[in-house]
Length: 418
Ligand code: EPU
Image (cartoon, rainbow, N blue to C red):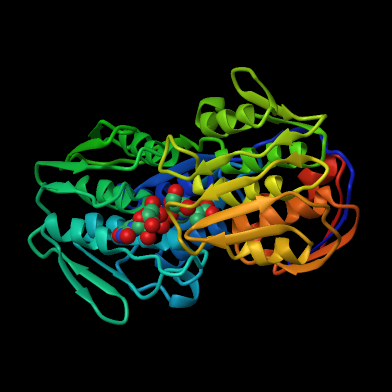
């Protein structure tokens, strides 16, 4: 997927079935390395970041099978502690999970380069400090080499911030450490909880997942497991925004509404009507909505991965009223989409990590997607704007959205994907 052509201005209405969570799939796929056996995954999203993770695992020696019912099995028996090429690891952030998983399984881990969306810097100092507290020797040069010749020992480690990646990586490494590891100020995102649940299904002893103190009792034997991925809350939130942006009503199905409580609160404050049942949600604002002031925060706060999409809603003249402000508290460099919105005529200024928006009528444009969620934000603006727009570098969207062209077409969007 390189290019999306959008004929915007049509209200999007209908149901979208939400796929498995990308940000859960990545640590879980690499976490399977700890089992050294075969694991089967249901609802594994076919997004490019996940396919790339499978390619890395195959390079390391895993055997991957895709079943007709869409399950995927990964046989981890052949995995060897070799350095995967940077051309594979350098494209996804999730490759950092190789560090915790390989260290736990083999007592050593190597990673040349990790990638992911470019938000300026994406440090992993907390991951490394945690590995070091577990007793690993950390040798940083061109990449990272970890070594724990005498095994890992449980520790009490406090993260400087509730990092998703560092919490997941330390949970992985701690599974094979001697004794108990306490991870304080841990991230509580649903995808971190999902990793903990998968590890428990595989035999690990972990308590406190989803709270700020996670305890891992190391040394259990991990075995193969079957795991169903939880629904992707960011994919769900993005489609709900698409319905609201276009004056339609999108229902997302097979979701966990509780994971989207922060978006629901924001929508309700904006006067957007939200309906939900056990496993579905719908949002609509037929007469428009008012802008608000928001800030992103670790879960259960408003997710940074829905920030650009919300700013797009703020920008839409004819739909939004009043000044909108969004302060980004996780990724300072997450405003690259703002230039694209401005090229569509939006009044968006960014200063001190805050986007300030006054809605005005947008016009069609040809834009380049800056990153995964920034691209989604631009696509939302294009869907809501009359005329034919074009989004290039659309492969960035494919990193985290499964079949976006088909899903959007089914709810009435006029899109062509090349
Ligand atoms: N941080 C450090 N040092 C560290 C780790 C993190 O300073 O060692 C800082 C980061 O710079 C950032 C904050 O802590 O300011 C949070 O980073 P976190 O580690 O939580 O992010 P991540 O694990 O690299 C994951 C998701 C991102 C999502 C963030 C925050 C994956 C593969 N990526 O990244 O998802 O934005 O958590 O929720 O799980 C996306 O899907 O579009 C995406 C970017």
